[in-house]
Image (cartoon, rainbow, N blue to C red; front, side, top):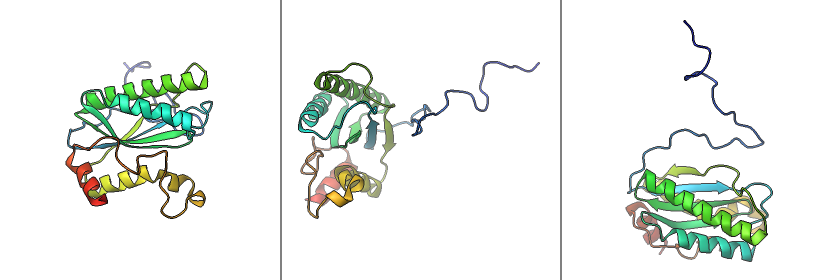
Length: 187
């Protein structure tokens, strides 16, 4: 007898919709503590620009507070108009998940309080890429701290440092070998 309802089948599940596809709800890969992660969170369209002094101050407090959580550290960040990039370290998959959830809650509370609004702040769940090689890690760190050059190259002069990113110095000293290698090359 053929089943017509339930079970795994092609095309099942929540469909991606909207102008941008959503982050897939697939199982996240296993994370070992020696690998840093490049994570990105996108804001909803009704959340105003994040590149203001007040928004940045509130977000940076959230980043620093998130670092107090055991097993999770924000090392680099870049705040853009409608999204934020991070390079983070976590002791494992569970610590990454809990750390990003805590960070997202802190950012949402801070932004809602600042903007005198209620409700959702993030457009989707966070997107994460595990950085496994020195070259991949160096490219990710460069991309994150220089992200404004990617989004608005016509407004950026040579030698300019983004005040809304951790371009001058990491938020916290890296503990993974891959990120420590990137930090030693920059000096």
